[in-house]
Image (tube, rainbow, N blue to C red):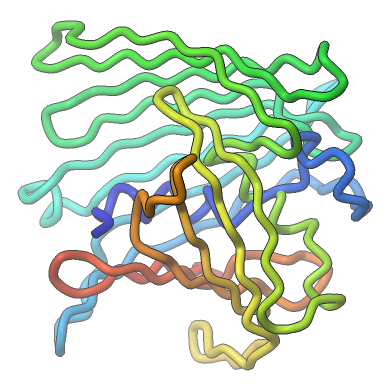
Amino acid sequence: MLRVKHLIFILISVAVCGTAAARGHGFMHQRLEPETLQYRVMFKWGLINKKAGTATLSLTHDAKRYNACMSAKSEPWADRIFRVRDTLKGHMTYSDFTPLYYEKIAHEGSEHKHDVVRYDYSNSSLVKADCTRKVYKKGELKIDEQRQMSSEGKALDMLTSFYFMRTLPFEQWRPGHVESVDIFSGKRKELLSIVYSGKVDLEVNGVERPAYKITFKFTSGGGKKTSDDMEAWISADNARVPLRLEGKLPVGKVHCILDE
């Protein structure tokens, strides 16, 4: 089962991005304007429907690249159960959202984790990355790991995957289509499979909007599930904004909903 913390940053994690990890994907994009997207995270269990946290995703430009940042935090009542303060940062190329750098600074409960992924495209047939993870408990460094990861095709991280989603040609797909991509973190490589369900009408903040429905499936190299499936709805327009994400908890569900 997924915890609230996973859903908050996966929301924008997974939902996805056209990156050079996405090289060869073939779907061209127009340069995105600077933007800020706000999400509310709702906990639902039976008749209970309560705000559990918020997430903010921003995109800015500099001379040579996109800069993305996502921050997430739990509400005061949820802090008493499990406190979350996460920040994800990343750099991507203008040409196709190729990820260049990824950093996750997470304060979750009593634990502080710091992941860094540095991408290397010097090998034309592989996407490689130097990945590190540091874990602090009660202010002391408990784990300091370094790994090298590689992918023969696409490779993303939990932040740039958001933009990958926004480049996918949903309008060309039939229900049941599956798009897969590797996801790097400071700890491991996972396979993200995006399963397309079709175009639907979705009510968001009292307004009905056309949306593409997809399901995210996470597995390890051996095909073992690493987390529960999640469902997402992406606006069926040029913006391709994630409108809603749903996932299960040990008790109830978490809904991440775009605030407009």
